[in-house]
Amino acid sequence: MKASKIAYKPVGLAFGAFSGVLAGGLFKQAWKKLGHDADAPDATDEDRTWRETMLAAVLQGAIFAGVKAAVDRAGAAGTRRLTGTWPG
Image 1: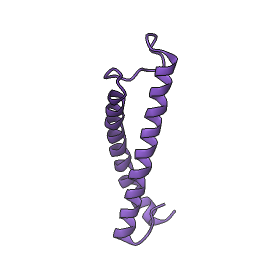
Image 2: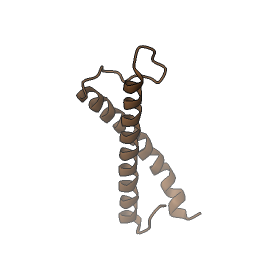
Image 3: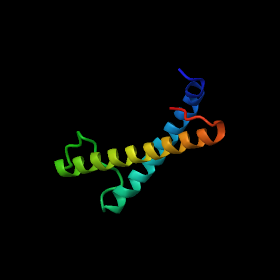
């Protein structure tokens, strides 16, 4: 394993935590903009419809994946600018 990849591990973990917090906030805002309750339904929420729970799950997954990819890519590009090597 390359030294740059090992050195990037803690940075990647920090970026991952940051992206999770950021994505959670974006999802809550998007859910409210769609005109739903403040809290998105859980899959086992008996009082919510299939359509609502599936919409929430798909939207949340898409937002989390997009934010994670953007933050990971920016972190890797920043690492390349600082060290001259790609961490992946």
